[in-house]
Length: 559
Image (cartoon, rainbow, N blue to C red):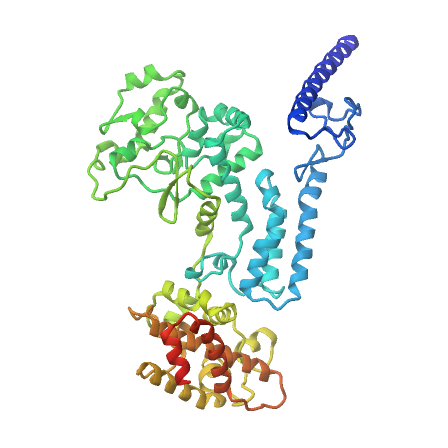
């Protein structure tokens, strides 16, 4: 036995040496054409399989037992060391970057830009090629949101903050969704990529599903059916299903015929999808393989086509009961909706059908985020307060507008979410006095922006300017401060309404800045707020005036 083992080791060494010699010959051929030459002093090798503990060096290069680095990723056999080198060290770098930028007085928009461009970029590449540990994702997510809120605790739900601007969010990065989107993007490479590397995923996926594309045509595969796959491929399939969870129900005969039978959300038995591998290998893959013109294939025909006939009668009965009744009786043959034929492998992105060829990672990210998104609770709260229904998409677009600048957009956003500091909120947050320094009464948003004694003449002058410019009489109330001017008006996107809303935003910015200056002072120093307002309008409108905006010129001439 000892001699047999020794011969086997010598034989393996000979194969390894021959393989190494062949690889070295290829590198020399490449060097003769391209120019670069292999530097053996800097080259390292990694033993794998049963030889992973070998300390033998061959070919003039070193073969260390510790992890080695290739293309920015560490490879090795000790999982703890790999997690530390690939993930934990990068998390420390990210925290250092965030702590450096924390010292600057950035807006929420600026902080989110830092998170996306500088912090998350550190792990995007490694996340694309290796499974990320859950505790690392949790640590990153906590660090990102702590940076946005300056370590003072979340003031808005994270599931709301990740939404788009017109939904009441700030497009904050969700690291879990980034991971799913990057993993799901592998489906495009596996199905339509080129190169010999595709043989590896094709081998694993075909062994389980019979076809590579079939895995990604399914929209609900239970984990127990993927037990034979490596972890990385399991995560790719799970991420793809998560990104494609919103799937349309087919309405036309053609779309129904092209529906996959297995792992389909619309073909369920006791609330779960069907998955019979031997039926797939026998050619029963799509609805058209078992249903023709609204009629199921005869039992005898199914029996003859099946390669494994064990328990076939029960499986056929379950399949018949799982197929939707409308598909079997043919009521969907004539559809009231004029829908186009869906491709077999597609993703719904922003309510548009996109094939795997055209889908982008950003589309997959938006799909995942939209499933997590939670509408702001303040929408219902303000509707109850003002006793009126509002077009919230229009409100968010008007109040969070790039033309306003980040500071004014942030002020509007905080007012809408009720997180802009005022006496009433500071009393709850920091146990400070809730009363106004000037009026000695409870200071809420209405008092801060409208009814305070220092604003009596300001709003009169403001309304006079609006009347001179647009010949319309307005009365600024709390609804204009919170939601904007005539938010439900059908013509609120016209130049006049946009300009009035812009002027109200500038007024809020000036009033809040004056409040911040006087809040902590012992004595109130009277300031001409309207003069500061005029200078701010001149500064902002002069930038727009260079583009020959008539409305801006008209406003400036009447100030």
